[in-house]
Amino acid sequence: ENSIRIIFDKFEKAGMSTCYANVLKMMWNRHELVGSFLNVKLFQVLTNFVTNAMFDISSEAISVFEEILFSENVKVKEMVSDFLNENKKEMMEIFMNLFDEEKYLAKREGMKILHELLLDKDYNKDFTQNWLQEKEYLKFTMTSLTDDSTPIQMEAFHLMIVFLKASPEKRGQKVNETLKKNRDQLESFFTEFLKEKPDEMEKALDLLKELS
Image (cartoon, rainbow, N blue to C red; front, side, top):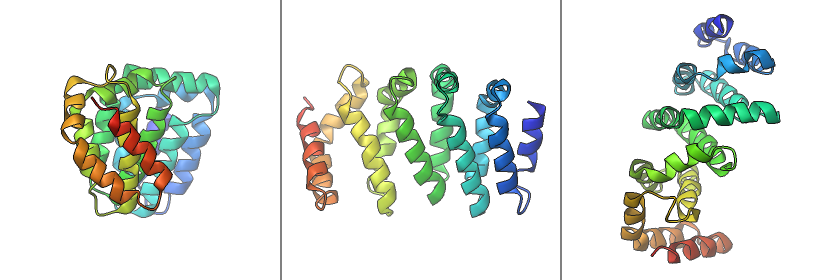
C-alpha cells in the first residue's frame, strides 16, 4: 500500500504520468494488491488527477480509473463490486465532485464510467439503487441534458435512460415526482435531440409514457 501511495505522490510530476499510470496498472493486476487499491481516499486522490488541467495527467488518471473499476477477472470484479456497494454514498460523492469541477474531459469520461457501472446492476446493485433513490442525481442529469457540449448531453441522456428504465418501486419518491413533473419537457427534449435517431427516440418516448 505504501508503494501505491508513493507512486500517487509522484503522479503529477511533469512528463511522468504515463509511466506512473502503467506502473499502477501493473500493480493492480497483482492479486495481493487489489485490496490496497480499493480505498475511498485513494479514489479521492485519483479524482484530483482526473481534474488536472494538464491533458496527459487527466487522461492517464482516467485510464487508471477504468483499469480499476472494469476488471475482466471475475474474482476481482466481485471485489470491486463489493467495494462499490459497501461505499456507495462515498463513491457517488466522488463522482459528483468530479462533475462539479466542470472540466470537459473529466465530466464526459466520468459520466461514461458512471453509466457503465450503473448498467452492471447485477454486480453493482446497491450502488445503482443509491443512484435511483436520490433527487440530487436526477437533477444533475437533467441539468446536463442542456449542456453546451453535445457529447455531454449524450452521456446525460444515457444516465436519464437508467432512471426511466427502473421500476417506480426502485426509484425514490422525489425522483418519481420530479420525472412526472418534467415529463413534457423531457418529451420535447428527446424529440429534438434524437431527431436523427428515430429508433432511440421511439424507445425514449415509450419510457416516458410509462411514467404514471
